[in-house]
Image 1 (cartoon, each protein chain N blue to C red):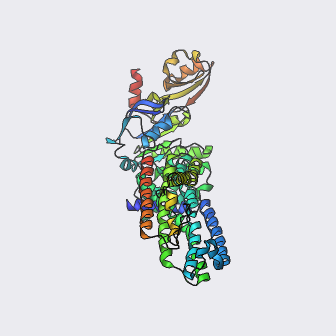
Image 2: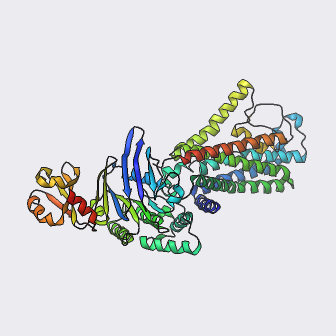
Image 3: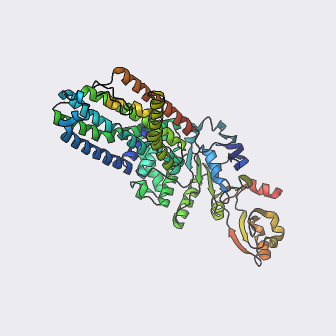
Length: 275
Length: 291
């Protein structure tokens, strides 16, 4: 079983990293890295300007954390594009491109196929984001002379959990459709429109923080530096990082999304007809 | 090996694509599912290899329920369904490695098997190119190579010569013919080309609107004749018609010894195409004698 998993994983991984989508994502990530490096070099002395005047005297550590917060703010949206590119067509393309006739008639459980392809998509997503992470580390160390590794590692750990959850979520959507375009559009619309609209409705009408939404949970990637939630309208915040309870809450949300969506995708694929 | 389909029905919504259909294949050889487009040939094969679940009915391979033993059964099946597509950024060799490993091959055995099947199918020369650059014919050859891997006792091939140039088609037919030389496999293949069916088959199953219209053994004492023209002119030969293809076309199965009479009586009135049979099967003769 494990040899089948590795065989399928390695072939899907090869098919992913040789694809045009991979190079397109690399270009997008490289572009984001260049822009953020530019911001870091030009804005590092003025980073306190983005805060209310009462907090204007920042220590060097806080200044650096604020800059890393900005890097993480952009970083948390990059996996959405990478995951959508790699994972949205993951199952639907097997039907649309008719590769399903080949792969679903092989002597292997469809569950193994889904899990191996899922891990291949997660791997290429993480690899494509490494460019950004390296650029961040190099820029921050160059400008500030040091880096807060503890916070950086928490942020990266949360990023990986987010990628796992988001990829599983897009796999589930992909398994429902037989056309790639529908899977792409639905993934984008659900993440960027539905989630944000639900968040606004719950927060503004009912004063309820919809922590269970994937986009809200993803803010932990930047909040491990400074606990400002960009999806909630409030003037109350501090320069402290998010606490362990916030990290646990977001991690639980990610894990639940990952498991629930993967189980859902596997159930759909197990019963899917190749037409 | 025995393949048994019991009351298979496949519906797509309210549309019945297949069945009710029962079929037993217990003798090795080439079994052709012949029929026009939309007859249900591909649906039947999809159901047979688990790409599509039957709305009702059961499939047994060697007495084992397909649904409950899918993985084990597929290890003994070489499958080519529809016009094959493969992952475009992998090479043909990587595709064969992928499927070969899933069938339990590894190391030197896998390498040798890849060489063997690619030589048989004539795909060796383009095996290291990415599949995205393959022509339809190259993909078809690769698909047959995948189906041949690990020398399975059952092969399911959906229009294997489709998309291949005429010379390539003849080569693929010879590949199938050679595979069947010693009658060691059950090879089920679909086609809508009568000549192909007649040339290759030991048994021809004619499918129309999802149900079996005719199921006969193919042998050398008989010829399959396609008649074009006014079918009323067939006279007594109308009784030997095994399938009406259209208002003015029919397939007739006729004893070779009766051919001269047939020629004399019919040739003046119709355009006639004779198609030679491939093998001798005593059971068929007995069956037809009974009629």
